[in-house]
Amino acid sequence: MNRTLQFPLSTAAQAAMNLYAAGAGVRTWLYRTGWIRQQRLGAKVVSIGNITWGGTGKTPFTIWLAQRLSAAGIRASILTRGYGRTSTEPVRFFFPGASAEDARTDGDEVQLYLRHRVMTPVGIADSRYDAGRTIEERFRVDLHLLDDGFQHLSMARDLDIMLVDAANPWGARWGLSRVLRESPRALRRANAIVITNCGLLGDNQRAGLDSLRKTLLRWNPQAPQFLASTRLVGFVDQLGQKTVSVQRMQGRRAMAFCGLGNPDNFFAMLQAAGVPCVAQEQFHDHHRYQMADLKKLENLAQQHHADCLITTEKDLVNLPDASEFDFPLYWADTQLLVEEEHQLLRWIGEKLGVSIVIPAAANPTAGKPEEQEIAVGTAIPSR
Image (tube, rainbow, N blue to C red; front, side, top):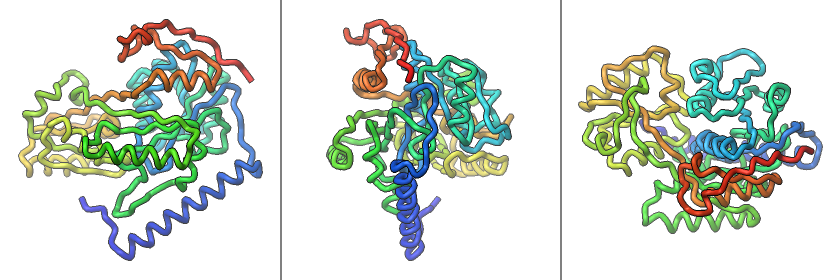
């Protein structure tokens, strides 16, 4: 599917993007100078965001961090807008351990939190402040994780963690070199930068990563940088009853499809794992599939003699209820790996005034002596 814009439309679109980013800069200035006041919750807030239009892995990182904090005895919550939700209540919330089936009308992000058993309360509202207040009225919370919160300036935060996609740091798409929500100057607001999807870079691209790190350092010399990758664990069938290893999937003829902020990363991950895809189809980010989409995918699979379909977990929850294919459907089971994760967690703890140490039994990367400590679980000091 060719989504490249042709000149002069591409020039006009780039100018419009630049104008939008400039407007975002003015809005940030109004908040920074106090012309517009921020609202502050009782517990501390860690914002996770980016300056591009999706594709950096904010929700997987939020899940990763929530799981680590819970393992360390930190009482966290997740606050989200619930992008694409159809529920009509101004504020929604879920108890820790709630079923993802109960969140079918609350958007794919909320369903992913619950599918991954983050064991934290989840608040959903256009106003993340209202969601946070609702959570604080019902739960004892040490801190809130604000998913996609970098531009949600109406709420005060204690830390801003910025995610940057190593494979596409400036959000290039549609033939445009930069598709940004804010100017790169906004990087100066970040307290830390996590560069994601580093595992997709080949040996010949490591120089590009080094160059990116230097560029980010020039924009924000104070923010520590951390690297993260996404590992393909295997594949799970649509009903969650059967798993297929990466090695076995290498012998199949798969057709892959997804609706992500950066679909190329998904296809590149499959290619890097040696999973042959006879065809690929991409949809807009957060795409809610209709029956016509399923029929289109089946027709493409038949045309290319595929023997199965592969998608992402995010796309799985966006399929229609009781959807069925004539082909086996699998979703890619992935794991986020953060290099020097203990340094990142220690840095977060130092900034918040709390010790964050993961018990060895709860840490999938445990094995080194410094990873065998027991969680302190110190309460975060109140304001």
